[in-house]
Amino acid sequence: MPEAVVRPLTPADAPQYRVLMLQAYVLDADAFTSTAEERALEPQAWWVKRIAHPAGLGVAFGAEEGGQLVGTVGLEFSAKPKTRHAALLLGMVVREAARRQGIGRRLVMAALAHAAQHPQVQVVTLTVTEGNAAALRLYEQAGFVAWGTEPMAIATPSGFKGKVHMSCTLARSDAAA
Ligand SMILES: CC(C)(COP(=O)(O)OP(=O)(O)OC[C@H]1O[C@@H](n2cnc3c(N)ncnc32)[C@H](O)[C@@H]1OP(=O)(O)O)[C@@H](O)C(=O)NCCC(=O)NCCS
Image 1 (cartoon, rainbow, N blue to C red):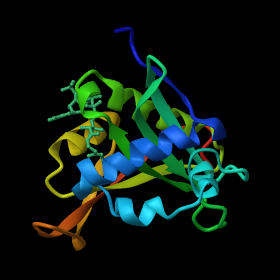
Image 2 (cartoon, helix red, strand yellow):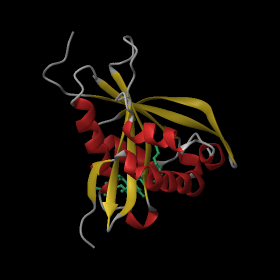
Image 3 (cartoon, rainbow, N blue to C red):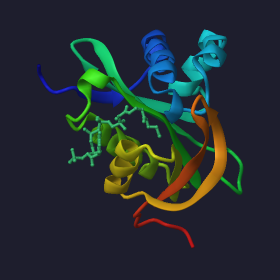
Image 4 (cartoon, protein in one colour):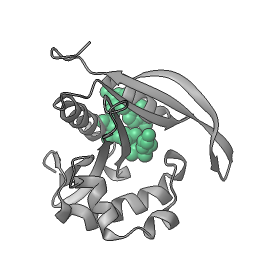
């Protein structure tokens, strides 16, 4: 199988993106704050905004193999003057059959590179469910640093779990003081 192509998603990708995420909310339920039932109610426009927001406040990258979306990661930007220096990385998943091939790393690096192109963005943040060793390791390798754990952040079938908060400060030459 040739290497997956990592690219920005467009509104045309919304139906495939929706399927991938709805599956992920079930298969990797503890990794996400939303449930498949909640998200299944969202209209098509919500999914389009998630991957290619008309005002540029949300983008997503996809990894495609043989015309199939096998992985994705999203970024959300803030329009508020006091928080627009921070972007949020979210919706990270790689289909089980495609894991451990470096796709997750390539998606995170694509998201960080994109964030770095936004002159106002200085830091990318994310949260990971406590105990998700694969994701924690992936983010650490990409340059994220864990700075705290929010206790009882999500309710799961096996009880409440904490969320580890991580940040990655972008190395940029044009950083404003
Ligand atoms: C986390 C996830 C996205 C990783 O995707 P992936 O494509 O398998 O990751 P990569 O192959 O790019 O791995 C990059 C690094 O992550 C770490 N990693 C990935 N999977 C791992 C695992 N099962 N155990 C330990 N470390 C792991 C390793 O450090 C790896 O580097 P290495 O291969 O040089 O050791 C994937 O496991 C996944 O979709 N999990 C379910 C959803 C989820 O947890 N999303 C994150 C929400 S915050």
